[in-house]
Amino acid sequence: MTKVALVTGSSSGIGYETSLLLARNQFVTYASMRNLKKGDELMKIASQETIPLKVIELDVDDHVSVNDAIDTILKENSRIDVLVNNAGYSIFGSLEELSLEDIKEEFETNFFGAVRAAKAVIPAMRKQSSGTIVNVSSIGGKVGLLPYFTAYHASKFALEGYTESLRQELVEFGINVILIEPGAVGTNFMDNMKTGKNYNPNESPYAKTIQRVFEGAQVIMANTIHPREVAQVILNAVNSTSPNVRYSVGKDAESILKRRAELSDTEMEQWVRESYMEKKGFIRE
Image (cartoon, rainbow, N blue to C red; front, side, top):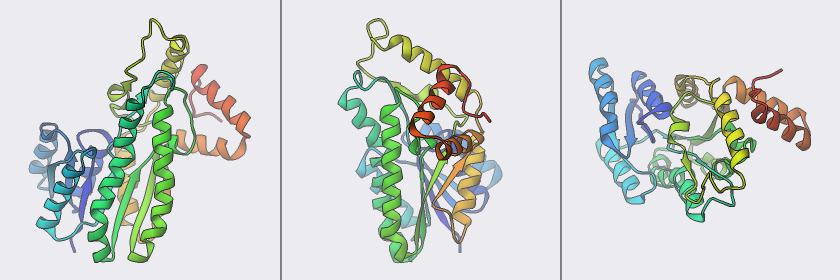
């Protein structure tokens, strides 16, 4: 039986590589994105390699867009086996200077986008008595690593708790829900990062510290894994008959989780602070 997969946020990075890898492994794959023009390269590769990959318009912030896309997939295939909730971004800035709109927009994509997509696919998966929902979180959903990424961390922590609970709801229907927790990945994450609307570097009392943190984050992002590594973990997970609840990806993610298990809260805060303020990075013995 040919399996059908939907990947959100597929115009670049993890979503792009996951869509290609699933299609190359004979999943009928729908690579979704808000702007279909960004899917030209995917379609070119799909044509050259003759792989079952289609590009479909889907905006995770819009429930009509989500439902329309999934209705199309179900009409064309009568089933959906895998949903990879990958769409997301980060907003940068102090909580004081972030507007509530800034924070709500972050949650709208990173958290509620995943909820919308899951709600749309669950009825079909339940009737099939099978399916896998993959929520792409972050190691920043396990540990609050960086200041000024407060809204991002909060959205990923929410995704983690939601996933753990949803698993219990769906297990009796043969549906797996799993978490992928990458560390730093070589995507355009930093380029796509938004700054709080109220932040003015010429007036902000946080400006000097923000600059130091941002420079430290750049050092951390210089030691990244390729998004293909994350895509491979996702493929392995959806092919597993008994997948783990969560998968951390990357040496930095492993290092962070190891420290979190070994250190007290105070010690952990100090280690993290040294990692970005002193530009030591997270991959350390």
